[in-house]
Image 1 (cartoon, rainbow, N blue to C red):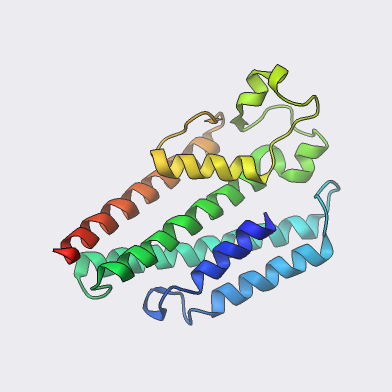
Image 2: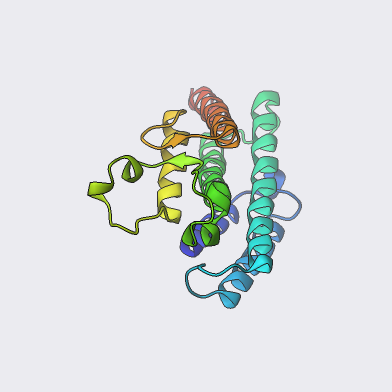
Length: 203
């Protein structure tokens, strides 16, 4: 999780100021600071309940979400109004970064909220999952003590953003369905506008 988040925050640094929330370096710096504190306080796996760590992790996810939403809205506004991002390379670079960060952010939300988060899942506090993974329906192909990790949620987020619908991981609860629907809508809108503007600019 740390590596993926750090790379996505680094990608945000490439977005021009006109699309960022304030200075282009401000939000990534805040996010990296939160991430560094999380790693320092919990360098290993999250197995024990630490309320302050969970709130800080949720705050990091919310901050990344806010930053990415602003960048997406400003990019979409610029594309629709024709006021910015006049060259195809800028549109593709900013749009690709927004799409990628959206995948990471949604993976973090899935990871944080499914069955109460990593700590609650490790202690099996919630019997009813929010997401149904293939290993749950075919336990003979998984370890006895298998539980989804961040990479599993990252894969779920990536495939949902690419296919605009769930693939092999199914949402079971209402919040999971709504969150995946929101991600598909954002991804579809962003990709469609970016491709349309890039093609029009290349012409």
